[in-house]
Amino acid sequence: MNNRRSTFLVSAMAFGFAFLYIPILSLIVFSFNESKLVTVWAGFSTKWYGALLQNEQILGAAWLSVRIAFMNATVAVCLGTLAGFVLARMGRFRGRLLLTGMTTAPLVMPEVITGLSLLLLFVALESMIGWPQGRGVTTITIAHITFSMAYVAVIIQSRLSSVDESVEEAAQDLGARPAKVFFIITLPIISPALVSGWLLAFTMSLDDLVIASFVSGPGSSTLPMVVFSKVRLGVSPEINALATIIVLLVASGIVAAGLVMNQAEKRRQRDVQMAVAANE
Amino acid sequence: MGERMMHGADPLARMLWRFPPYRWCVAVARRLGLTGRTAVIAIPYLWLLLFFLVPFAFVLKIALAEALIARPPYSSLIEWSEDTYLTIKLNIGNFLFLIEDDLYWKAYLNSGKIALISTLGCLLLGYPMAYAMARANPAWRNVLLMLVILPFWTSFLLRVYAWIGILKNNGLINNVLMGLGIIDQPIVMMQTDFAVYVGIVYTYLPFMILPLYANLERLDVTLLEAAADLGCRPTKVFFTITLPLSIPGIVAGCMLVFIPAVGEFVIPALLGGPDTLMIGRVLWDEFFANRDWPVASAVAIAVLLLLVVPIMLFQHFQSAEAEAGV
Image 1 (cartoon, rainbow over the protein chains, first blue to last red):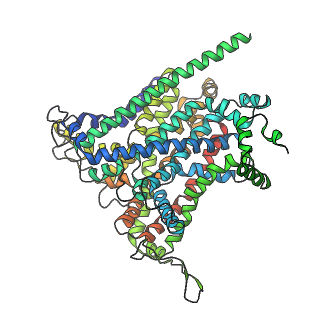
Image 2 (image 1 turned 60 degrees about the vertical axis):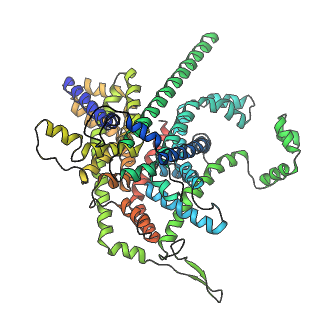
Image 3 (image 1 turned 90 degrees about the vertical axis):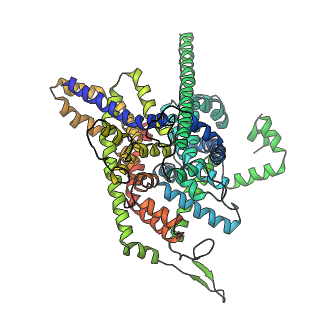
């Protein structure tokens, strides 16, 4: 009985992971295909990488997307950390329910609605106060910050509610002011969550097609917008090459971040153990 | 209240105190009862209020306007006529148009149907995976978790694009099946509802697995052991203990899949056929192809009405989870 169940579980897991990874692997394999027909194998070649590096439209859009993603991630981490901290540590205050709602609703809100509503806001603001002038990098960045800060807030909130509040309370009892407690105690404790929040905000911004399409203006096409217009016309091996580069960058970034955080966690645990031993 | 009492020995605060504007700000803040605590709450609050909540008011406003060939392409609701009379023109024609036109009803119902079936697909595939991960050896758990999260970090658009190469007539699946001699005509999978289901299940699967895993990992194993010791059979243990206890995880996962899937645009646009009507796609076309902003806004309001209950359900379970400390 038990054996049959574990066979079922293992095969379900194997099927699930195959389902998740075969498309990505097929993208990578066919990026090295000689033929322009993406799915018919005609020999090994790296020519599509060469073609990609010559494609100024894609490179320009990629650079624009990276700049937006960088600004977005940095601001979203600051705002999202504040929001997560407020929700996890500030107890009750007037309007708490609304803040909870405003940080969880963006997680599930269909992108077409968020995009349309932000565009209408920007248009109305421009006609009322003259800002933002036209649409472009600024409006895309603001739109991205709004949805990525919600993700950061959730990460920070769950990290904060899983760590013990007593260290912060001890510091406060010893006379440290709230701001000092936050910077000296709280921030270091949640630093792994800050790193993963920043990375998540960065990749989400790099990935967003729908919201950016609504709030962008002429001359500010992000990478997903360029990719989408190409993909709509059919498969192209250059896009496969681009996908391979992105997958490898992201995978190595995540593995590196994971290793660094693992090391830091181990060091912290060792410190804790040494402190306990010294006390005894 | 003296300077020293407010700022103690902090050199920065003492320096700032010398500037009159700072002192005025502090005085105003104190008069209004503002503290540092209020400011910390206010910053993220105001941002979300302005850029998340207020925009919906504009959607509602434009949905009640008339389409014009102008920049921006809609009429204004409030007009000052010549005698400086204030006139407010509300136009519910856009909503009537949605109700009368068959296309919108079909898109509306079809989105609900596609999202529902895909959510079930995610649950059927994701639950056993999450369960197996939660019961796996602790050393393996983090690796498996990483493997679930990794695809979620790589470009969504490119992962949907990958399915075109797999599903199309001369794509991977058809090539393999024809190569093995199982079929001699390619199966048409691209540009069908089937492709859209596959695409949604594929892209949203991590959103289903993660909350389920978080829930199942916390499950108290001693309860299961107790039931087994008392002679309960494994299937019965699962249906009477594990499944009911994992309901919060199931609801969170299903909402995380269902709500965005209803408004999905990219997947039906890339994998679906011309007759795969989904409301997100209709909204997109109204906006970008027809440039009819008022009708697009009315569609957005209609979608929001459909999603209000699921969103509130999600918030309820999400905040319960947050209080419990995930």
